[in-house]
Image (cartoon, rainbow, N blue to C red; front, side, top):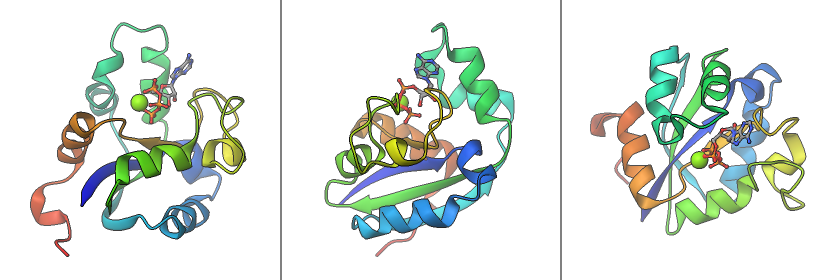
Length: 139
Ligand code: ATP
Ligand code: MG
């Protein structure tokens, strides 16, 4: 089993898409083993996206991520990372494949509704960034 970190970003929460997005990922066979709603500080958002420090969109995306509450989840499945990345679609919703979450719900390259870890290394960092082991269901 593999774990990945998923986030419903502030735009998804504000637009009332939590239930819809969770249904879509559950239908894909991704099991929720941890879940909470948080409102990140700017510092927490900067730490979360530190791999992007120095890029032109870093300030703006970290402002966006702390502009309202997010739902953060740990998902588990055999190939959770790739399965969820595929379900999310490309960063730019205009390039996202038909049937993906970003294609269906995103409105902007930045306000793209969902986040998912992109590698085993980033999943390990991101899961531990928001959850301790006691908060994650052992099945
Ligand atoms: P995420 O990490 O949120 O799952 P991603 O892996 O598809 O998204 P990254 O390259 O990691 O894309 O970018 C992180 C986030 O920064 C994007 O989801 C988006 O919100 C924002 N972002 C990325 N590229 C741009 C850009 N060119 N202009 C504005 N915002 C961007
Ligand atoms: Mg990313």
